[in-house]
Image (cartoon, rainbow, N blue to C red):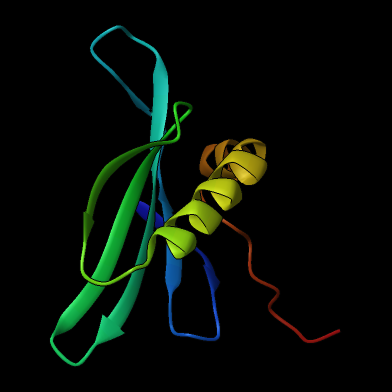
Length: 95
């Protein structure tokens, strides 16, 4: 299960997974960044808590990937919190 997190002005969408267990029984999750292009998508996926890049494809620059890594590191607590709650709760009425 993947949950939406944010969409940036360049079209990059960020989604995060449910909490999983790795082979050692530790809780992990994935955070995925994806931007549509003329020929498909630019994509990069990180694993938490290590912030390791699991894969990348397309034309994200190293500067963009480093920014995404900072987002993942700085928001790790929120990703875990929201995953435990079944994703972000959307407002049903404007404030």
